[in-house]
Image (cartoon, rainbow, N blue to C red; front, side, top):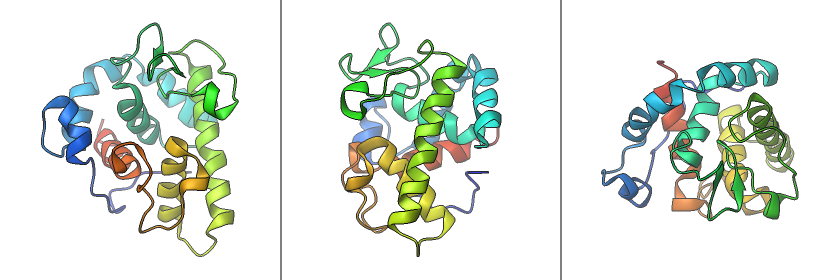
Length: 178
């Protein structure tokens, strides 16, 4: 199972990412702010996690980062209408046709399978990395594509805010308690 254990080291959100909430760097604070909205999706997050054998906290961490638990979406779309759903699948850049409604278990399963496919790609690309590094590389690839993951030291260099995988892991660690 892909998990988000507390032992994964993460720097969390950058000041750029946290600035949207007028916070200092604060992945856990942003996750806390999203918690009430996230509760609405708890059942489908668990279902997707079970179906895909992925820790639901990781799915929640991505949902919090991508759509602020739906709060940043208009009619299920974000990123100026380009991306779809709680986990923000971008059909234009990925060539993937979204399934289900934006807030459905089908969407979460599809998006989680995309993440899992990136784990396999990153494992093949960097066979000497450990499981935690593969996971962070896959999370970064989920945001920006695997071609932009070039080393573990620079895993977030091309991600949104240059902190995507670290922020998602920190949020997931926080959601693990709920």
